[in-house]
Image (cartoon, rainbow, N blue to C red; front, side, top):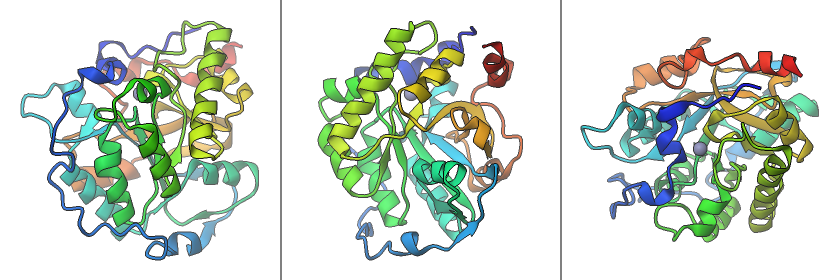
Length: 306
Ligand SMILES: [Zn+2]
């Protein structure tokens, strides 16, 4: 089995919540006064025509965000790969809205592949990893403002041990879930699944799913491999634990039924202007997550090993 460790560059993703600097300016300086968020204002999401008939593959960018906050000028390349400023993030949402993209849930993608459901034209999924507080203070109100939905992957122990300042609390998760946001599991403690025993992996998968379902009252159908680390055992156990889809950090915008447990994502770096962002979400060959990551093995070759 190949340990899919993304190495030192993974530090911020695996870092304890307390290591992340807090800021009092939770909104990041953006204007949230126009946030609407009422069900009636966003009614067109549910009435959007379903135009893409069921097929075995679909062009569907799944964007991967971590922090939505300002970075100091000297921030490292790693942080710049894991962060988007609130202003740039809002510009990206506005662009997606103007271009006619429709944000969807993973549950809709699963229904598309497994139950013959159709999808709206220009579907896109927005994902937010690690449960950072700005997911509640910045992302959630902005998604409401643009009548969009997102999928959030908070590690359960980080929520449990957090103080609601650097990582979102259960109360915030419950509010966001009631507000139409989707939650997926990112394990209990964000440790890489590679190198763990079957029993340990199952505990991470099952216990985190149960906790999120208890608090949201909704099925948790999607899983995100911490640090993108996975192997054939982790992939098979994810299905066995009751998930119906999973994401890693393999770059790509084409999703297939066969890849439901290894769906592709695109990371959005701090440096993106709108032109670069627009090209990134349309590219058939988007660049890998981090420099050097093109050396990672093709996950399909790992599956073939079993
Ligand atoms: Zn993560």
